[in-house]
Length: 131
Image 1 (cartoon, rainbow, N blue to C red):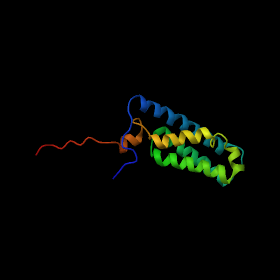
Image 2: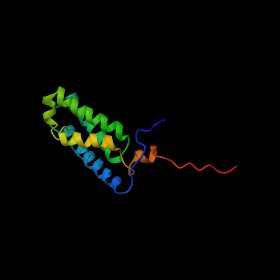
Image 3: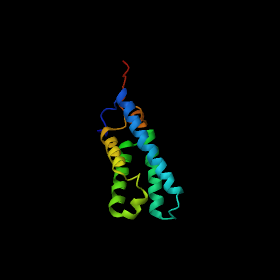
Image 4: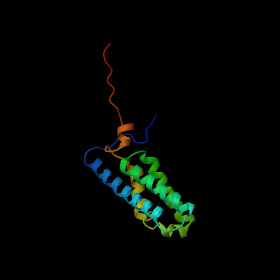
């Protein structure tokens, strides 16, 4: 079975990917919590987007299921921007071009060696004992 990423960069590239994931994750967590605590009423769309931003932000920071989360985050941002422009105006930071480009970069580059994905799904060294 082919895994989504064949390698998990270590060293300085891993630290760079950690900073990239943390920056976008913290931004999504802040924007998601602000949208849930804001005064926009009890619109279902606002709650769903806020919870999605909190979940994806937390997953980015931890590096857990990074390709799935990055794809979902980018698709949700683009969908809201295209189909609900009025709702998109309240999520200006969440749906900015900068956020979408960083999310797509993380999707293409992978989570790096400092992530839960690398720990759970990374390559393993199998030692077979002699009989």
